[in-house]
Image (cartoon, rainbow, N blue to C red; front, side, top):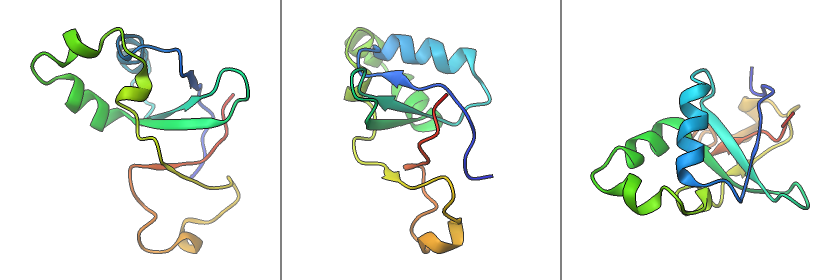
Length: 103
């Protein structure tokens, strides 16, 4: 399934809060970062990429209190939930793919 319901995080979420959220939601592979006013998608956090970056020496100390947008992908591929993966082309199956269906 291309789309699955999951929570979104706001741009006000810190990197430390995102880390805690990902630890508490082990089945979620990515989470959208949305504008708290408009609901527009501002970025995407891929679990594996984020955790690999966050595990590096000094990163938690440097980024714990900073906005998650500092470590998020600011330009994910955003598609409608009804679009078939085959229709997207060969380069679309990548970690920055996000189907907006927060809830």
